[in-house]
Every structure is written in structure tokens, then in C-alpha cells.
Image (spheres, rainbow, N blue to C red):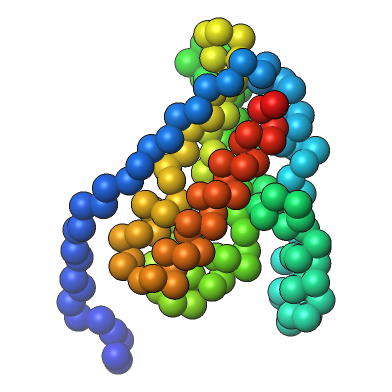
Length: 170
């Protein structure tokens, strides 16, 4: 094959991330109901605008969709229900939350940032009847790129994510 890559190079770089765990006494069903009601879905209508190259319309729709908390739900993994494969179920979901505008800003600066957008938020019922949230802090995920512009966006994601968790937990 003409022009084919004859060699490849692999590299490995350790990355230190802050893993955040937040426990709240608010019941799981209430928290997930609030999350599902509060955060809009990044659905096919957004993808269609992008595919049809209606970028100005997409910007407007994203601006509206990201209100009020700065995130949209891209996907919800039913991890707790998947435990049925192991003979049990548990209250637990992993939310893939993103801010497409922020992701585009960071990915423009370093395409590798796309690996960490959307963010993942693990939400599950805990032994005390409340809810536990877990996530890797965005500023430490994106901090590996050593870019001050990416760092500013990632810090904003830290703040918005914590604000959203507080909002749905109280």
C-alpha cells in the first residue's frame, strides 16, 4: 500500500488525577430524578444540526441546552442494572456529562483532550440510604496537557460539576 505507515510508535505517560467522592443523605431516586430533570440531553437534534453544517443554529441550541448548569447528558450507563449479570442489581448509573462548547475549545488546542470529554459521573445508592457521587476532577484530567487555556476551561468544569452535584443533592 503506497504511503502506508511502516512503523508505529507507542508511548506511555503516567497521569495523576484527583478522584472525588461525595456522599449525601439525599436518596438515590430523588438525586437521579433531579439530574434527569435538571440536565438536558445531547440528543439527535444536536447531531443533525452538526451533520447538516448548521453551525450557527447549533451554537444557539447548545447555549440554551447547557443552561442552567453548564452540562448536557450524552449517555447514561445503567451500571447498577448490569450487575444482574453477576446475580444482583444495585442502584447505580454512570452519567456521561459534557459541555460540547468547552470540549471543542480544549480539543482545538490539543486533540487529545477529546479523550476526557464528556466527563463521567458515577452516581449510586449507598449503604446509609443516601447517594454517593464519584468522578475524576476535570482540572486534573485535562491538566496533563500543560496548557493554561485548557486549564481555565477545566477549572470551570470543576466548579460547574460540584455546583450541579450540590444542587441535585440538597
